Length: 580
Image (cartoon, rainbow, N blue to C red; front, top):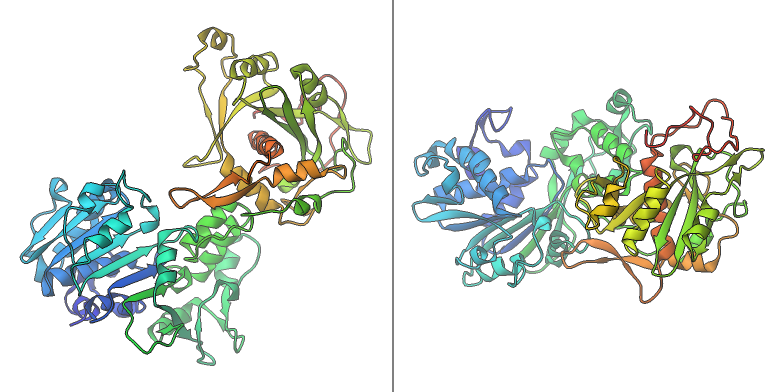
């Protein structure tokens, strides 16, 4: 009996687990059949499932556990990113699912949080653990292993080898070992993608067109939908276009197509492979309509972080950043026709970013228009702070008018001369905000933190009450900058530079490229000894724009009046409100 046959005959779904309570039916997710059944074939040892979210992968793993307890008892290792996730999964999902199947319910004790990491049964056990516990990974000899969300595992578990290697090491004594590796991917350096590529054979699920009956892989490029973010239109007008007959395939056809589908290998082998790879995307999900996929893409396409999540969690693909390496000439190709010091006619506000070095400053001024269209209008260096502020406090003429603008907000680095920089921020509050670059933030692009814990309490006591330090995720902002360099100058969201931009500036903007860190995540790092000061300035200018709300600013219905009236924002009173 295969795993899928066992599940169809014995697995019971409760209403708590599924709206379709009752007997499990693999025909509802037919693409899982072959994946589950690799655990009962005679040759496969390592199965890699490169998957999106919402395709039933975890149910596949639960069925393997149930089959093992009921029909082929032995030891199973179930590894998740950390022990808290493993414990919650065991108590809230795995043990409940197993207890609802009568043929194995009598073999299990009650779900108990304190015993969640060890589910015992006659002839074996399921031991759950986190990938961040190297001692536990190396403590048992195990013939069957399920490794869930492997791209979220730490690459190094303390001083031991990485968790993937530790687990594989514990299975090598069994010729009939079975290891399932499954995860939504992150980048090409992530473990699940590398494991998929290393497989001897690779399978894609092909389904027949309801019109011409030709089998094909569902590909996002063939999904047709309106470009307006309108839920009603997307639900009714989105369709999948058959690349052969151009038929318009609707959601109502999907289930029939899935049940007639089949896994097709990319290679023809004359032997039975030991390592097998399967790949899916969310277009196959019975629970997700094609209009929802289109909606998610439209909402995320202009934000690199959101786009990466769409590529990973919806398309089941590793994110391949176009911005991983940008040449200096690409920056120079983004020049506008305006000379330095002149604002584009559609400018709404100016921001500046300052990178502080031991004996001097680098600075950049960027003009922002509606829909995040921006252009650098000036950059340079200064030795003294007074010289810096002289440059940044000027009035800059607007193209084709008598209007002039001043910088609304300056973001200045606090990495060097920290106490001195806070003094400057105090003297020019609220025109200047202090900034500290971080490699990453779990959520968002920046956060405001209190200055209460500063070492220099005397200096802190004279700071304005609402003055904060801005911690900025430099990797996300660099992603954003490089992503927008792919847009045509003048288009929505484009990132341009003035006509006087020189090679030095362009070399600094492209002084970094994306490389994998020790955890397999892509991060921006300098190339050799090339300085990156202007890139840091642009990150801070971008942050200042975000603080001012550039992501939601729209062009005014009537052109506002700008006056040289001493207003530090450069705007007439009542038009814009800084920090608002």
